[in-house]
Length: 79
Image (cartoon, rainbow, N blue to C red; front, side):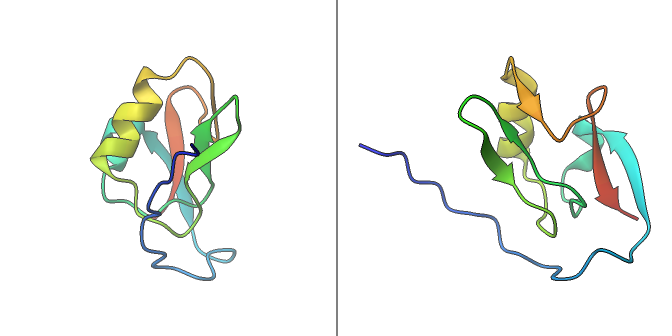
């Protein structure tokens, strides 16, 4: 059986021209992502750009051995 996940609500549709900043993963709770983050394998995005990062997603990213979209345990968010 495939695991289904309920995506976070997409709250920003066009973030290309917005100011961004890198923040520590734990400080990103409730912030809007400017870049998708997730786990690999299987390259599964937990949250996409324009979505708010949840506490559950932060916990899963923190526990994962392999992630994408993070840089030195920081995520890119909209200012």
